[in-house]
Image (cartoon, rainbow, N blue to C red; front, side, top):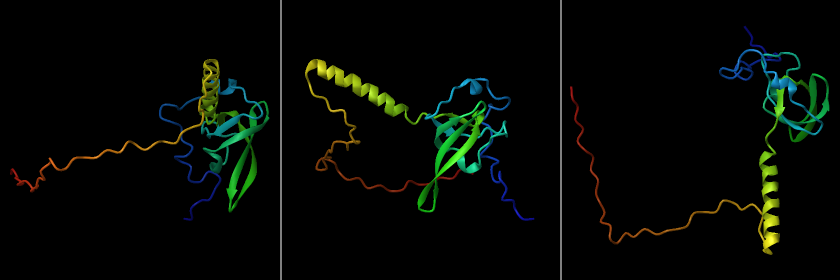
Length: 160
């Protein structure tokens, strides 16, 4: 029997609900506001089949460019060959959530502003650039006091 290449082929594990997260969709999903320009993550919810994304878009991040009463329109860039194609996807709000990809950046901006104001008050100059991970300090090991040991395998006993 030939295998299927259907719309939801090979999605048994992809669209499954998390452990102990089955059942009706939480009300907070419907009360979350979405605005044009919000960055959202697409995660298909198998409990709602309407407005479900294609399996390619599951796990992708895009930008909201339109809001309807029950759905949002998301702009995604899809790699096809050597170019990026702009895709516009209509999704119900059960299948999207606000992305946390900019949280680190926004927190860093706030911390840098606080550091800058402190340095200005003290009359100092502060470096706000991110520093790459520095290598650990080098150290030497003394070998002249250490006597080399020869290791021999231990006898293997079997208890029957």
